[in-house]
Length: 393
Image 1 (cartoon, rainbow, N blue to C red):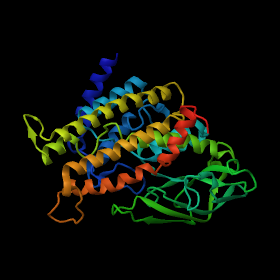
Image 2: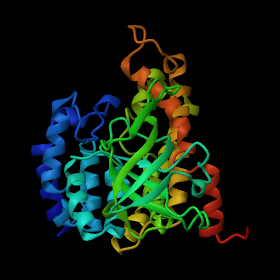
Image 3: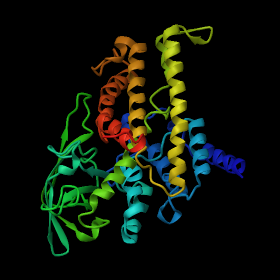
Image 4: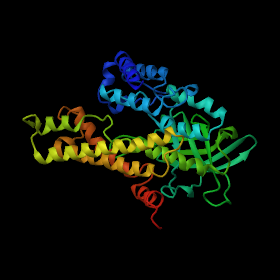
């Protein structure tokens, strides 16, 4: 049965995956979708539409919500066959990795029917309204308020580090609906359209030269009470589960998933080969060690897939994935720099540096945020110590 499915998937991918999609993905061809999406590469949109039609953008979601209803084994085969031809993901973003799974678990039937098919088709880009200027690692101290007014809530406050908010269509947001309750009990999880009057977004320029993060301000923003996910004042439960999905997703940047170029290719170009092997022994050992760690991490991640297949959310072990995966990604960039030398620290967009070299510089700078986003590495280590290893406080 598995062999038949593999043959079917292999044939379908060969027929439907465009040639340019079988290459490393440049940052400006990110397949995020959404109402305002602009596709520099037309084949990025073609690939998204073809994958969405088969349900392969969210392969394990139920078919009624735009998924393919694949089993764990089938999903693994799909991933293996995509990696075999170096196919890019057809669709990425918080809709698939964060709010979608949360709605499958906590959303009402009406919320699921409204949002999940649009997420699967890439029609809506989501952003996250969690962190605030004075509520980062201590997220539950957030102060953005939501006051009931008839069938709506009126929201006032500020969020920060809202990734992709300048391009997002909808936000899932944590708001304080009971200022007198304990800080974990007075929080509500709510959804609203970013085109709602009173929403203002200001991008934050990073050292990498990009602005993936934003400040977001709410001035008397009205959100329907029907957009509350789960119960009023019980949003912290949803928020914690969504963070577990997020951390598992962020951790996926480790483990050898498709990146701009393989370490072996970079070593061949910048170090050189001798008898078909990387010429420098120390670099060869470092690349081999990194590949071994990637493989071990891939196998460990399968544990999370098995848990999801049995109806269990990732749980506290997602903090382990997030910590190790992001550290592995940071080590990869440090290894790239050690191989490329000064060619990996270029900045000016002129003929003196190749596009890949400039992307590596910015990717290396961007990787420094890996230990902060989705919960700092220190927070993840505390969670692993207490909830995975059972160590005392």
